[in-house]
Length: 530
Image (tube, rainbow, N blue to C red; front, side, top):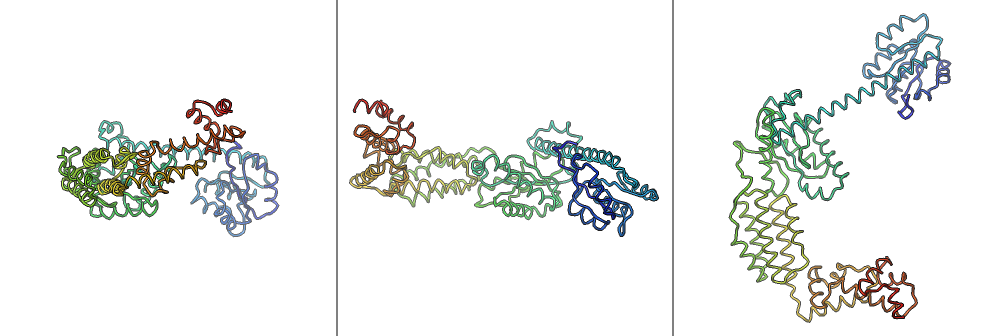
């Protein structure tokens, strides 16, 4: 037997201690890749051991006080049919041995025990166990493949590939021959979560949620459950549960939040019949999920009958009057009026029941125009318009989209409203420059300087460049290079020791920066000025 395989566990049962000792000593257990995990003197003791150790083989005497070997075997094999039983009997107990074989014993031995015969018997028993394990693996593989093929078939049909049907007639789909409805479960903020998770974390989270839904489905009369798109799962239910649609959906939300701490929303379709209707019923469930865009929090959304008619693409008149009003607010720094008009924009979208895609296009278009207005008014720099648009795209609801736009423009408006005089600006920049001159040898960051002068990073950058003519990094680098040149010219400090004195922990990087700034390496500079 392959030594790399886990050992099979064996229990010895006999009321004669001498036989137990001889069995342990005479059989080459290790060579056979077998391990004795316990021994008992009677049937009752053996039962206790079996529950504790879960053995693969039992070698037991037939005649023992109390529960005999045949009674033990009957009780154990009723729950563990793959367990190997080898029975030992005396010459006068052959009828018992025949009875044991009829009851499912693997083989029997007559006393006195022939150890070579038992060894051969154990080799055959191990081979049988090997075959059982391989068969179990094969059966499991077939079951998994069948499940995957079934899920693949359903996915193909949901995507509208009806050509799949003739090739999949061998699969059992009778549960869809009755009336049924579909629930589509979608994780909220999945795009954001996907950015945050590593590949391994994503695999574990999605696996955990599938397990939660599978266990829940079993206890709630679900017909099937499988993942569809990433962050989305499909459950099918018999139409007999249609009166409980809302309760089922809310329970799904509760279970996922309870066991994974994640939130989700559920769209539930109208009822239908037939496997060929999977695509239609999926569209019904996702149509219901459109309503999530207008909801403040996760919820259950049920498609009405007849189906809601929401256009996938919508041509909507752009609210130019709202854009013009916000631009005027930016010019006059009227913050409260600007925030109020953003709320009017939200109402404009809600009243027209725009799809997420149409609403997003409108909000992004307005955001770009307003950004350009801030830009042309010299009210912002180093603010990523692309970052804001990506943030809008990643959000799941109208409320969140409008709120992020409001927050962004409000912050910019407040920064502008601080309106420093020319003298104030000079004071702020001088304070920052003095701090750099005193701390150039440290690991300085622009966030640290901004906090020092009590400004946002973007506003500080604007003021610093306007007054000094340099960006923060250019000024810091120039300061460090001036200090480095002074040290190289007036001291004998080794070149590699200069780097940390002027804020660079890597001497090679210091040399690169120095050469870029002066056109010479530190060594060349020292030689020319020494």
